[in-house]
Figure 1 (tube, rainbow, N blue to C red):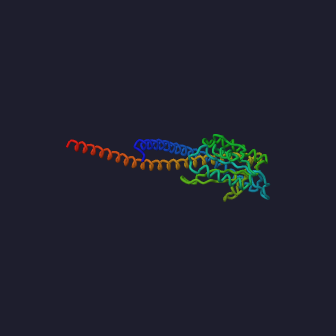
Figure 2 (figure 1 turned 135 degrees about the vertical axis):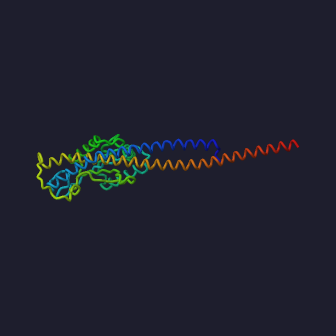
Figure 3 (figure 1 turned 60 degrees about the horizontal axis):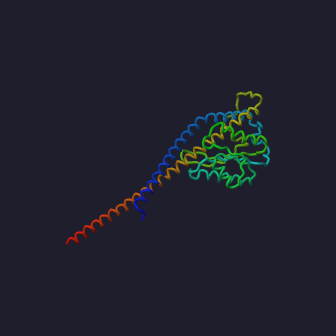
Length: 294
């Protein structure tokens, strides 16, 4: 059985670990709260851009645009772009593994005819270890999602689509369904279905004049919409990462407390045994001395 010194040393080690997990829990909580506030501040702009696209389609529902599925026929087959949003760090439960699993299923669906764009050091390292080619990785984006970085990602993806190199573009990210639940989503970024911007409202009665023309206006709005969507996906993923880390650290704290409780009981048991043994030895010594004196 372990001695008192060994048990005390292990208890100190568990307490030190518990301090770290508690600090990580508080840091993750603060980061998630800040990211949610930022998302709430940018959502009105994203909704306004979406509303303008809906207005255009209410004005002319049959407008042709390269960013939308054609009214007739199908898209030609070709390379598929895949933007995968992972974290830069671990210690977040199954957060990264779930994203990687969804991304692998998408790659298998298109039989490897894909170009991979990765956000997050975890995803980049995973692809390097498994020999999965990456078209481009975006460093230092997962831990600090900003609109300029979202625009940078959007620009790279749009270049591939405009050049005709990419026929479809998907994004794999984690969406915060509610305050506690997260879900990995595979969403097609491009091309859009017109149903995404359909509205139950009747066609516009007010005549709008688009300069130089409606299609040009639509082409100028789409990049802003994509940047807003990618920024929202980055923030959602960041919130889910912090929430997963909070859950993992909370579980670690509880496990550490259970270990401490067990060690405390064992410590008291060993200490009581040592005290009992010492009393027994003292009593035996006293009895022996008394016998000698007789």
